[in-house]
Length: 359
Image (cartoon, rainbow, N blue to C red; front, top):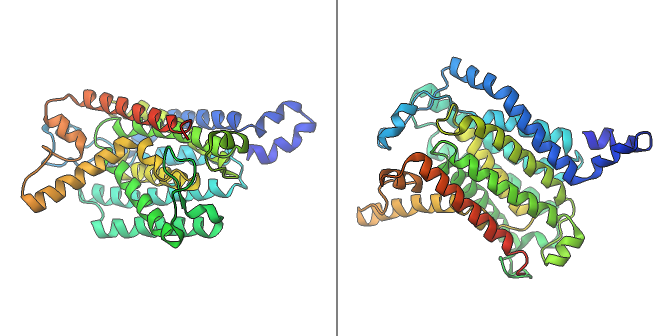
């Protein structure tokens, strides 16, 4: 909005020239989202508490979690609100990728909202039936994938691997089901990780800081050419959205840090996962994003390994899945698990960025 209405007035007031710089708008989008969370966070938490929107705790989980029962959940509503306002104010409203990613972010968030609402209303941890949740996720994922496919160019279906300068394969029409699986998988992976105070929020911050670098570089013809990565016209504007995600996540972490005053809920975790996957599809980092969000991948993999092992061998590989619960039941304090997973997430982000120069 500011770019559209204030930048044209640069001839009357020269300082308005700063609105054309992505770095300036991205920084202030982050600050805007952060301030919105600080300002509205206490009010939303209090409203959730009054509405008795409390988290239901699994009986088969770590016993230390039972005291968290009743803590307000669905805090992801605050994040979605903060990001949406920040993006509308600071991003180029004519950017196609920005609108598509925001739509995916809100769309997956709506599915999470329904799931959280049913959990709260039923006073248990069941929520939406698994099939209904997946149907909703697949519907949004198909819409996003087909839209990108139809609006893209010949490079849209190319698959790039880290450390390789050129695409390894052209998936063609098969890129659509590949993209759908990535969107659904990433949204569920973030959702599975959101099980400890601040865990998913801290990891999301690292992922979106990394994605802000990748979107900025991918949207610059000079930098992308130098690094040997695909140049995607218009992708640079996603830097504003990524940094607004960072700001909103930092603001939310203020309330979500141990002991959490509010939980993100599926409304937040599914939304974040959908946005991460959408951005990776836009900038052709579909495989690299698995390294960027390596902890999310490990968490999802631990669940799949546990299920397959139990069905085939009637034995569990982990004390409990997802992976963070395994370490809790192994004797690690919750804060230690979260801190060490954050460190691991930071290492994954560094490794992902290091691949750029090796191409």
